[in-house]
Length: 139
Image (cartoon, rainbow, N blue to C red):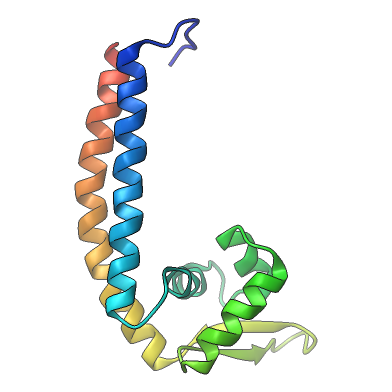
């Protein structure tokens, strides 16, 4: 897509539509997490742990990067979520100074339930975003 020198009223309307739909998704997602007894941040933490690539779980620093929060904020989130019995800290097998995060069975169960619903909602969101992108390409 080439850059434009002039942004039209229709461009602004499309940008608003995309941002509004993304905010609606975030609001819906927070409601789904609350129904499972979680905050939106706790849901994101569970997802960051489960979605982490690699054979071992992520460190708190890696989770902070995924969630775009400071390290101390991630520590507090991990503490609260661990108190709920959804995650645990484990020492790295190779470097015992490193602490990694893993899901408990209960954490896995709640994340699985939330993820199934989110995948369906994301499929609906993708359709809306694709339509908006197509209109931008043809504009």
